[in-house]
Amino acid sequence: MSVPATGAVPVLYADEALAVVDKPAGVAMHDSRLTGGEADFLVDRLRAQFGRPVFLAHRLDRATSGCVLVAFDRAAAAALGEQLMSREVDKQYLAVCRGWPEPAFVVDHPLDGGPGKPQKKPAITEFVRLATLELPVPAGAFPTSRYALLRARPLTGRFRQIRRHLKHASHHLIGDTSHGDGRHNRAFRARGIHRMLLHAAGLAFRHPDGRSLRIEAPPSGEFARALALFGTP
Image (cartoon, rainbow, N blue to C red; front, side, top):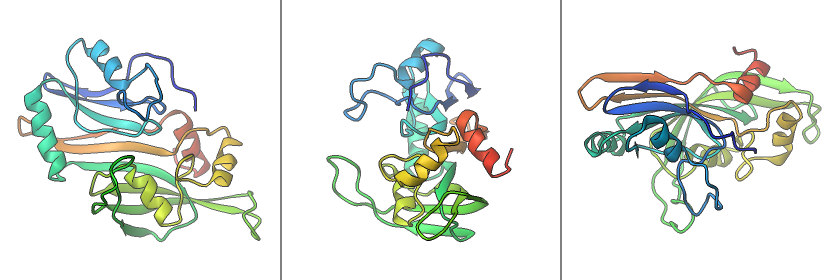
């Protein structure tokens, strides 16, 4: 996947204490051993864009787009961190998977913490099927392949949780080169969709000043092209 050229990150909400931005797919949050020596990171873009310190309240995978919550001082970061730790922040994702799962299902499957963190911890994700699609892509003995648009709500925050839970349920995330299914990924690439189809579509949380906020990030670009296949604007 090509990384977008460095530029302004869309701001969905901002005040003196915090902001919610719309992270582009293909941009890493910050430098880590998983980034492979890249030089373009979301946190650096935001520090330059806002001209002030930026503290990441949570993280998205590099290939995931959508809502990222950041704080501008340590007090706000601590208040948001407490909400995230206590699972008070409602995180809603859109995902495209292979197959037609049941209309609503829950994956309750412990996950480790990623490389170097072998201990497994409880991990729960709620899924709701929003739409279905059938494409003329042969799959085994079948002349077509089925796909579904899901709303995913992770109740815990484990490493690559949604991606790994969909693999566990045998409904692999489209475009996921680590946990997905290459044959189905190629079917979408043939239709001009080269990105992983996971988008952080909304966040609901309590502002440190006591207000309740719900911020949404409409899908765009290749994700919007994928939604069009489902007949979803």
